[in-house]
Image (tube, rainbow, N blue to C red; front, side, top):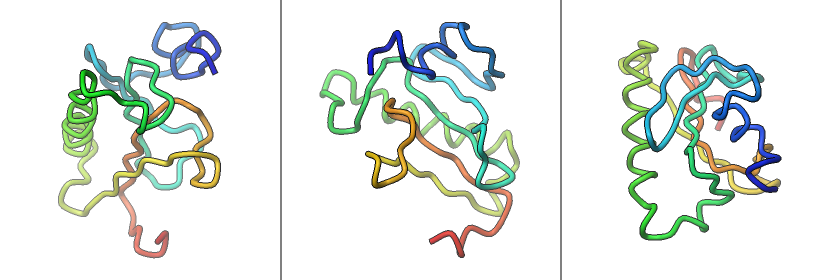
Length: 115
């Protein structure tokens, strides 16, 4: 999938309407349209990266930034004390629906049964 076809790239460019909760030079955050928890956010790199294995050393700082943004969003969503889960699905068998690397933040309910 090219960046021109990617739904996340289109959201970032404003071609598809979505509430962007956070944005910086490296990533942005939206709510998942099919939430698995009361809080289900996606941290998405601006750079169209299809898979984690495609990240080169020059772009590795993007991953660290995504984790920092996840912690900021957990504070904003008030899920730090109760706990939250960070998930990166890679490939169809793992449940990755959009072929653009993204980090799920899940919280505001017990996730123990989700495995």
